[in-house]
Length: 178
Image 1 (cartoon, rainbow, N blue to C red):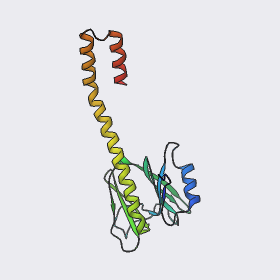
Image 2: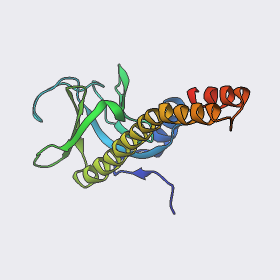
Image 3: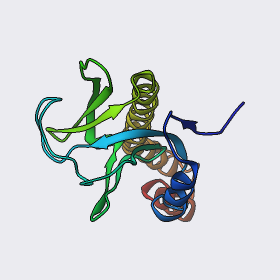
């Protein structure tokens, strides 16, 4: 199995190497890098300002933890990260020549445009897979939390029936509550 990240057309390797060192956390893995432009304001594909100002190399970075808009303007730059639990949807905007992705993040539309059109489906797929994984992890954790009271009730019954000492009951109960 190939664990190398997807690198979109127009992505400069030395920029991505820098991003991995300076932007990603130690326990964060890059899954994909895409070239384009991060937008400052909401609006349709033809309006809005770029976050990075004059820049030829803005990137959308998809990691196992978040989506990052990394703008590398000549004067100013920014790094905006969006955790998967905060992203309610991703969509491909309708454009004529270049591609655009719209993320719905806590009710705000975050746009990344001027992408190579063929890269857009790959970026959306990576993002949607991570959103799905984050929701599955959250549901699994919630389900485990719901099971804890039932497990404590079973321990109480075992203790009351004399099959578990008070000391072992307290140890097991502490383990469950952690």
